Amino acid sequence: MDIGSIEELEDGLTAQRYIADRGLATALFLALKLQRPLLLEGEPGVGKTEVAKVLARLLDTGLIRLQCYEGLDVSQAVYEWNYSRQIMHIRYLEANQARVDEAELFGPEFLLRRPLLRALEESRKQAQVLLIDEVDRSDEEFEAYLLELLSDYQLSIPELGTIAAVNRPVIILTSNRTRELHDALKRRCLYAWIDYPEFEKELTIVRARVPTAATALARQATAFVQEMRTADLYKTPGVAETIDWTTALVALNRQALDEETVRNTLGVILKTQEDLQIVQDQLLPTLYAQAMARL
Image (cartoon, rainbow, N blue to C red; front, top):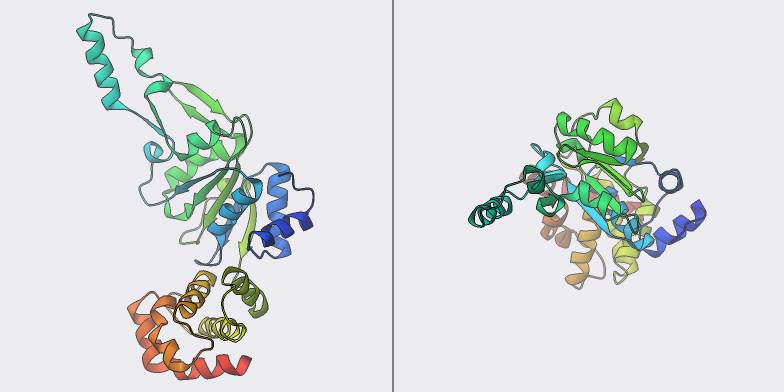
């Protein structure tokens, strides 16, 4: 799909049930047009990862995801050699009294392709969407390794040389800001911050993602989560939790909220024992009353 304008991109995202503000839509549009990586930062649960998923569907192309974590290295992210297959090949050659050629052992047929390399190779026919998710969880050494990919859309493999993209993949990086990313990485990317949405926008998102929810229920659930974000919680609920909670309330055949239902379903919204206890024991009546007063 060739996207000709920001408005067309916004319409396409909305059709995929992703509600983007103009700032995010503009950053996405420029990332596509300029063929630049896009770094998305924001609190957990605000929809950063979903951007890449929706974009892949919108562009009718594949999504290749690299989930980052502490200790991630080249062998998990880029490539490694299939040692067992190499050993079997050596034994086969020895059994047939054939010469073992080291260059042959490090050919493409012995290469195990990980997400970053796959994104370059699978973009030969059509550009893929490459999601480098939660890059802040990786080590600084791995972050430095990404620089060649982000600037030149290529990777260097000592035994094979440089592998460059024929069609540049659409690269989306996400970060929850558990640590500050290096300036060298940021310089290679366009940037967008995704914040918690205001009430009306979040309500629009909930209605799009949970269309079976009663109007009153969607409004009340959204208002309650919005109110919870004003509390001093260890883990603030994101839009993902609002969607999950509304879905759960629909599964319970609720048409509207009541305080008892909120109390019994807090585990869908809150993810730590400390938050659950303080809301149940202290904050729930006030939060519920303030949320209902919003409407």
